[in-house]
Length: 298
Image (tube, rainbow, N blue to C red; front, side, top):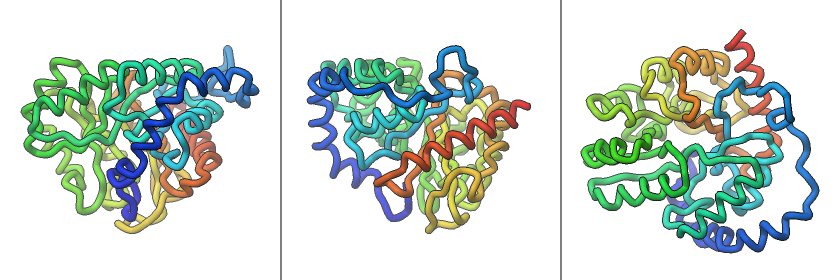
């Protein structure tokens, strides 16, 4: 999330639109049956080598926040990814069982699966926290990217143990309570091993720290990434195509290999610049990620 934009503000403004889009899923699925097939992608070609070498590379749907959910899913399908991390405006936490089933049917058709959802807030209210875990269980994903309040961890320790669903603390950059590596490491210390981190590489760079060091030091507590790059290592900046700014892309994937990042974790490409037309930029980011993975594994 850029310094000038608030994900929570956007969620509030977009919730109504997202609800309508999900309500209309069955009708739109039927209408879509006659659409032409998407352009072939090396990530989906039958018998072709996976360009991401088994890593669960997907997209944070906030990248496509200006698009209704079905259009966003269509873009993901054509980009060739297999995984998505939804944010709340595209897939609301209060979705009914019917809407969840509709979403699952839509994603199956697009050959996508949900790997994570967020960024979600947690507080001391155990039953409110439980509702988010119940949503994750019903929707079928294992990682919740999160901004937990300090008084939430007693509740979260119980819930991750009960549901076997990860909490991945998302760092939001300068001024946020999870700004520096030491802040996240301190927060998770002594808690259940399923409470860990979603390393947002762009925000790490904005905080003038090294994402590769974050991944290595967090180790098994590294449950997710938001893969981003920025023009300057300072608070006020903007996203750029990965590898064109300050992100050591090969180093990131080497570190993920070193820590044996879980195959069912979440690695989400997130691109916050150019929100009206981000698809080609994301395509370039994915190509650079695939090349970097090859080098990291070479």
